[in-house]
Amino acid sequence: MSKVRIEMVDRREFLIIGGSAAAALAALSSGALAELKPDDEVGLLNKITKGAAPAEGKVKLEMPEIAENGATVPLKVSVDSPMTADDYCKSVTIIATKNPTAYVCNFQFTPDSGKAWASIRIRMATTQEVWAVAEMSDGKFYIGKTTVKVTIGGCGG
Image (cartoon, rainbow, N blue to C red; front, side, top):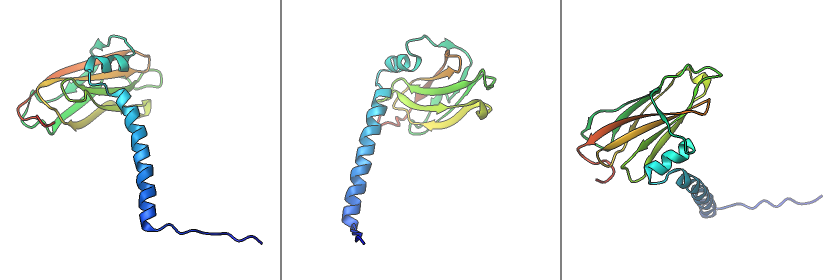
C-alpha cells in the first residue's frame, strides 16, 4: 500500500500563490482590453465597425446637456430593434471621445433580452461628444451621438 503525502500550505504561501495567479490573470485580461481600447476614438470606432461607416438612426442616447459633476454622468441608451431571432441588436459600445481612454463599456444583447436598452453612470473628463455604436444581427452598424458639457471634471480634470 502506498502512502499519500499531504503537504499543508501555510497562509503566507497561499497568499503568494493566490496573488501570483491574480496578477497573471490581470495581465492577460488587461492586454486583451488594451487592444480593444485605443485612445483614438476614430480608431476605436473603426475597430468596432470593422471599417464600415455606421448609419445615423435607430440608436437613442440620452444624457444631460450639462453635467455638473463629471464623476457620475447618467447615460441611457436604447436601440430600435424588433429583437426577434432574425433581427436583433447584438451589442452597443459606448465611446467618450475626449476621455483619457475613449472606450467606456459594451452591452451585449440577445433576442431573449426583449429590448435593447441599458442605463449606466459614466465618468467624463471634460466637455465632449459621447457615441453609442450598435451592432445589429445582420452586420449593420448604427450610431447615436450627443454632446455633454462637463462643468467639473470627473477624470481628474
